[in-house]
Amino acid sequence: MEPFPIYISHAQGPYKWDLDGNQFIDYWMGHGALLLGHNHPAVVQAVTDQITRGTHYSASHELEIVWGQWVQTLIPSAERVRFVNSGTEAMMMAIRLARGFTKRHKVIRFAGHFHGWYDAVELGTRPPFDVPTSVGIPAETFAWVRCLPPNDIRAVEQALGEDDDVACVLLEPAGGSNATIPTRPQFLSALRDLCTAHDVVLIFDEVISGFRYAPGGAQAYFGVVPDLTALAKILGGGLPGGAVAGRADIMDLLDLSGDPHSNRYQRFRHPGTFNANPLSAAAGIATLEIAATGAPQDWVAHLTLKLIQGMNDVLRATHVSGCIYGDRGGFHLLVGQKDFHPDNVEHQIAQADPERLSRGMGRLAPLVRAAFQLEGIDPSGTSGRLSAAHTEADIEQTLASFERALARLKSWELV
Image (cartoon, rainbow, N blue to C red; front, side, top):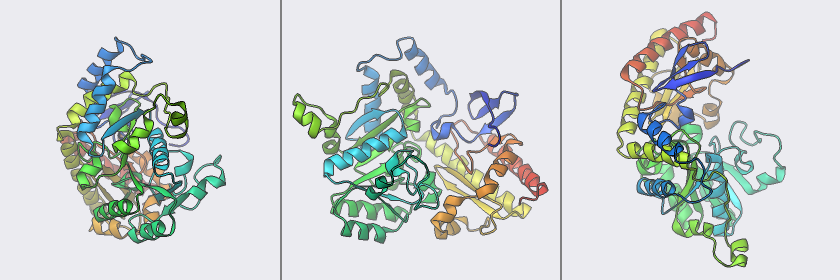
């Protein structure tokens, strides 16, 4: 928010309060990390118990084994698991593993998909997709990265056919930037087949979708298994944590031997002060035990659908252009956008230009969020994610607040 963000004093369940005592229904949910909501009792108890035992051992510990076993149980691709500290680190590791395993160098990614702030994945994150989104990245970096249109299997086929130096193809399986640009399920299966045919490592960035679409993530939900998976957010139960999970033969590059030459030239050293930290492991285990039932995901999907339908009904009733769309992962706002309308939404989004979806509400976005906040709702920019702690009453309150926010935007002559 400009010029100043809101500052939060505390949070509980689906709510948070700012320093002035204003209560908000939270649709950030820890940037997607809090599937169970703020301060779930099981997570609080697990972290409280662990903190009395120590926060950092500089050694292996039992919880990292249990945490890894939960990942292996739930994620179809997880023959092996290696813990890191964030989604960005997970993607960095996955790309290096792919390059080391294939002995190739280039990366194929898709426009509008977000993979963290690592140099190699900055190109193509936001429109214009052919321009980096940050200073400080040598132009030479992008010689090793090719950004293709999302959902275009022919472009992938052509790229792999004309270049034998491609190490990996990476994407958010549910769609770019938390499904702002939804992925067509048939694209995933075709991509899997192409990568197998060309011996290219397929990497799913499930930092957001992991454990949210289903206990086994988007790969379980869509039935397409990658070679490597990047995980974070829900994995850590609200504390910092990430992981790479994948094929044993690829992950074995992380296993150091007693041979110094092999360790230097044929293996991947992975030091990290806070890798598999006991507190994150405790929170992660407590969260995954509950996520494994599938009940949180089903409740979130139910409420998300109800919210999306209700908000489109409000747009229709108030004669405001635009639409709301989304799926099990969350919802996306296109309020006041004259090229969209609240009817037949799925078809519109499927036919929309990916760059247009990535632009979202443009300059209107912070004003729409401000109107929401003034009504006690805090969306995540132009989108939002629900938790298992949200209730039917929260949805009804959000819809009433949405109608008042639209009236406010009308009074500002913005929609």
